[in-house]
Amino acid sequence: MSRFPFAPPPALRPENIQARFRSALHEPRTAVVLGRWLGAAFLVCFLTGLISHGLQDPPGWLRNHLPSRPVDGYRITQGLHVITGIACIPLLAAKLWTVYPKLFTWPPARSVLQALERLGIALLLGSAVLLLFTGLLNTLQWYPWPFPFRQTHFWLAWIAIGGLLLHIAAKAPVIQENWRRVRVPVVDGRRAFLTGVLLSVAAVTVVTAGQSVPWLRRFDLLAPRRPDLGPQGLPVNRTAVAAGTAQTSGADWRLTVTGPRGYTLTLDELAALPQYTAQLPIACVEGWSASAHWTGVRVRDLLDRAGAPESARLRVVSLEQGGPYRTTEMESSYAHDPLTLLALRVNGEVLAADHGFPARIIAPNRPGVLQTKWVSRLEVLA
Ligand SMILES: Nc1nc2c(c(=O)[nH]1)N[C@H]1C(S)=C(S)[C@@H](COP(=O)(O)O)O[C@H]1N2
Ligand SMILES: [Mo]
Image (cartoon, rainbow, N blue to C red):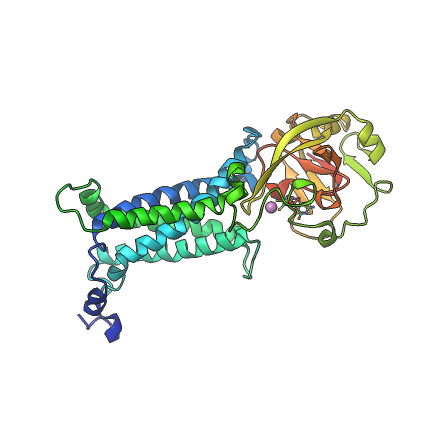
């Protein structure tokens, strides 16, 4: 047993570990029940993550097929993404506790098959811990690492799915054997343990989900943000001061629209065009969302006036000098949606500087990062 490259230190010898973890709960049925819950939460989190990634940075083949409906689609999928991601934390902890002694089996593998099985676990566990850690810090708007969050989180998710498939395949016999409850030999305390796990999931959900679920707002104790706090009842990620746009005056500002018949408008001219109001949410990838009544000019009217074709895509340019969201692109399905506005007002008031004065983009079923503030140019793309 100790011949595999080196012997484990005494504290890590399997028999010593097993001796310290004698609870009957370290048995397969508990692991299978927890695995099902964790697997379901993880799958919802994975799929909603793919949706978020696809909407924010669509690959070329997908670009012209992004739907601008349902209006609240992204708000719901991103809310679910963060809720299920947070739920995975206690579920993963409980699952790990259950199978813990097995992780120290020595030697690590006796056959190729077992080596594959353990590779699956290593990939799954390593990537899952990193996914949950980076995701959680992202909801706190804290990026204490040198690598880009979104790409890292995205690729970790694929590694985790690969590890999960390998893990399920390797454990298929155990899973099958323990899928159904066996009535007679019930392990003492399993039900209490599983109830405890469910209660912790419920607790972390209730104290964080208020950042996207309005009726849970009162219990939003641990979520980093209350979506109804901020100027004009909406939170602010990037302030006008941080963006360097705080001094913008309505009198000096101009909107330039490029295209076959490009033109420039003053704020008064823009405000004199037909105005529309739409109730649309801002749904931030960081997990909060909030709905508001936005009033402004339809982007499609502005494009028609510039002679843009129906299929035109758009580049939106902000007054902001730097920052990753200074320019964004908009597909034609959004640009031509009657609800997509270059908004001048929110909830009946002129936009606050922090919300993008004098004009911001607001469009249905889109991640918040694409709702560009302090807009100064709309460029029609060929
Ligand atoms: N020009 C510009 N527009 C921007 C941003 C920005 O950094 N610069 N942030 C975006 C993000 S991440 C979100 S979620 C929405 C809403 O952010 P707010 O709450 O700061 O208005 O605005 C978006 N518009
Ligand atoms: Mo955001």
